[in-house]
Length: 269
Figure (tube, rainbow, N blue to C red):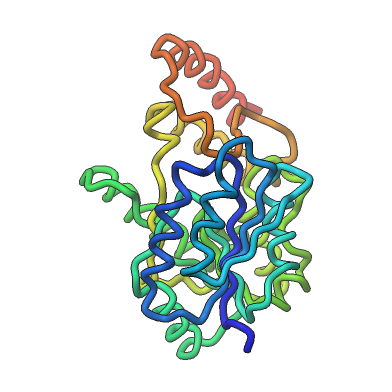
């Protein structure tokens, strides 16, 4: 019998972070799901990590010829068997009741597109407050012409996902926002799920610093609101977990000064 959910995970050098997510999936109370990992030819032991979970999870592993999140997610969707697709980032995490609550919510509320509540992987109170605001804005945005997604966590009914064309592989980033907006143009609003939560990794914050990450968020948001889809590389944003080393402070300061000028250009006619 086909599983109800297919959890699609794009990977690239995720041997350090992927075990956390897979372990959280092993602990699920409801086992009605498969896992589809699409790997971008990792140079580390990502494949070995995935295969080590094959006895505890219904898991499929495929190699992608292209290293790109949107492309890999689309391949994963084609290789999946579930009725609903759950797209998760390799560095995320979920509670043991995630699948159970998600299924119950889908049966109760119906729908084709869902966005889970995102919570940070930290106990820092200031960060938690920031995420409360972020979640509020994501939920509120579903009622405007340009709704936003919650980042790497989205749930789509499989046939509708293919009907709207899947993720746009021509975009540099924010393909998740683009997908939610195209669904909205079809008359399908994403339903925000406060009781279904995904743990969001702050590894970029820890590596690059909050200021650098905030700058990128501000630039990307301004671009989406005032210029539309992000098709070109407007800043450095690489996929994968293999390059999370500390960046020197003076490098961050120089980059920040350069990017502040770029931010100003977005609001200057």
